[in-house]
Image 1: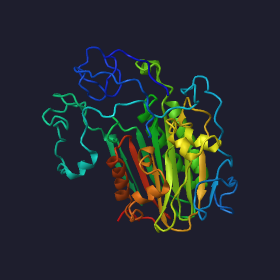
Image 2: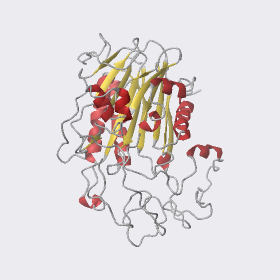
Image 3: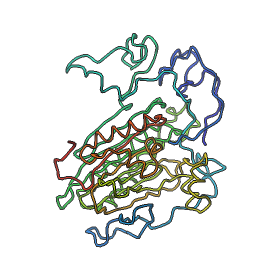
Image 4: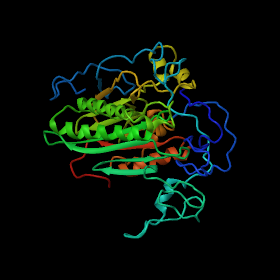
Length: 440
């Protein structure tokens, strides 16, 4: 695991690890009170658990068979047609990977509890919305007494107020997504993008992209946001032009990778306080849904699940993690139980970023023969519903007609079980409903 060098007591905020100056009373990133510095936790890093059908109308798209843990009646093809790569013999020079395992760890160690928590974001809906034109609230959410200044910090206790990305919700036609900071992290490093399109034959298409910033890297929140936006823009442009959805997904991942890579080309002064930090990085996963086809694409350990409307039919996980555990199982070195019991299980072996290995986007297409919903999520959710059957139990029965409600329920599922990571989930019905259909 890449770790920052040890610093003196007051050179970094004990809450969020951001650099601080010797005379600062409060952390400029999270507002933590620096006048009473707790003892530094022991250095014991942990790993946060955090294409087309044959004969299709898009010629030239490869579709050799691929192996997935799927029910027999859900056909798939994978781009590339190759098995997951064997474990790499060693780290790439200059790459932020462990010299022992050859993989990058997805999370920095963080305290079990931040000393001053913002209110549970799910309680926000219970508060009355301010009247139109009314001034925004100026009382601190922490001490309830101090005035909040223009920078978003309490003048009394110095606590940073909730930020826009702490909790986000969006609907786009028949699909919806929710992203939440969780209960342990000081910021939300996830991002998502939703969109609708019309294919050349007039049929509708929807897409969802979820990106999870790598916390051990510089500006992971910027990385996830840049990747999700670049992927969305590519899909919006490619699908109406007749690009096969699987090819469009591949191009979207490549565009997202370029957007994240460009973040590393920052002025030297921008990183003067973090000279040893890794380049911005994130994972990506996405889906495109049409009336007859379901396409997924990913790099990293965020996932896509298929949950049929008829719960007597088996659900399925449609992606395979780029992780240490998955690599050990694929290489035949461990069985699944042994690999996922190892403390290195959730170390990622694939990501978007300037210091990543050679980009290898995974894409696959499916033709489900029954209606259902597609769940696209970061590991902040699937850590609490890892198996497809567990995810299906967490998804409400009316998810196809109430995707926003279902996304909220799934985020709540993660928060109720600890919310140790940022949580992001998108819910899309299959097949794509006619234009104009949305949440009931």
